[in-house]
Image (cartoon, rainbow, N blue to C red; front, side, top):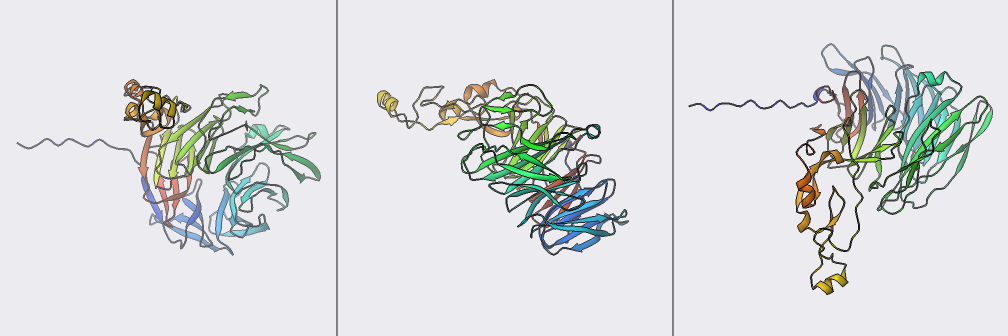
Length: 477
C-alpha cells in the first residue's frame, strides 16, 4: 500500500528578483530609483553606477562614473534627480541626473569634512545638505551655493543620521521645524554638557544650542542627539536636543522626554535596559514618532519619542550586529538586516511589552539559596554559593536550578528561546509564544538596505560586492 504524501505547508519568503555584480570593492550604498526600474550605487572602488533594466530582464549600468576618491555614502532626491556623493577625502560632490538616467552632470564640489564622509542627507524643503564625517563633525551646507551654514563637533564619529520628512502643509506656515537624530558611539563618560555653535543664514547670525545626551554602557557609550530647529520670520533659529535623558550605570533610568509640538510638560519614562554596544543603524517613523536603533549587540530598540509613554521596546532576533533598518509605514512592519545575512521582518502592529529591570539580590528569589558572594548566608546555612541568573520575563535574580527552562517571549522581543524561571515558564501560554517576526537568509553579509514601499522592493548590498533586489510583498503585507 502506497504511503499518502502530505503536502508541505507553503512558507512565505522574499523573492530574489535580480543580482547586480561587477564592483571591485564593497558597495557602500545603493538606492532604488522611484517609478523606474533602476538602481544607483556607490562603491569603495570609486565608481558611481546607475543600473537600468534592459529588454533581456537584466540590470546593466547606463552610467559608469569614476570619482577621484572611494565613495562612502550618497543621498538621492528623485524630485530634482540630485545626487549627492560623499567621498573618502571629505568632499561632497553633487550631480544632476538626466530624465532618462543615461547622463549625470556635475554641479559642484565642496570640502565638507577633513576626512571620510560617513552620512549625507539632502533636505529639499530647506535646501540643506546634512553630513557627518570621521572628523567628528556634523555639518550642514546650502545646496544652492555650497556655503557652509554651520557645524557641530562631537566627541566621537557619528554612526547614524535621520531626518523625517516635513509635512507640506506645515511648510506653508511661517514656522518651519527641523528634527534630526544623530547617533554617536564613543568612549567618553562625561554627562550633559551644553556646547554652543553659531550659524549664519540669509545674512543673519543665529545661535544653536545643543544639549549632550550620554547613555553609559559597559565599554562603549552611546549618545543620542535629538535636534529641533524653529525658523520664524521674527525669531532666530535654534537647534535643541529632545528628548533629554539622564543616565547612570549600565542602564538608562529617570528619562524625561520633551515632546515636539506639545505644550504639555515632559513625561517621565520607565526604566529600560541600556544599549550594550555601539549604535549601527537608525530608522524613524514620522507617523507614530518612534525611533528604531540597531546595535552591535545584535539588538533593535524601539524608542517611543512622541507617544507620550517614554517606553523603549527591545527586539532580539539577530546573531550578529544589526547593519540596517527600514520601516514600512503602511503595514507597520520593521525590516532589520544583520551582518549574519539575516533579514528579519517584525510585526510592530502588536501590543509589545518592555523588558523588566533586572533585580539585585544576594540570594535566589525563588529558593533563597545564597549566591557565591554572600559569605554570611553561606556560613550560616553551611551551603556553597550558587551562580546568579535572571529571568527574562520577571527580572528576578534566580539560581540555575530555579531557571533551568527556556522559552521564547515574542511580545517582549525575544524571538529566540531565553532563560526564564520555572514559574514564568508555566505561566507563558502558547499564544504568548506565537512568533511576531519572520526570518529570512539573504546569503550575503548586508551593509546597507533601501526599501521601496510603493512596490515592496528591498535592495541589499553586502560585503561580497553584490547588490540584490528582493520582492518583499510575500512577507511585507
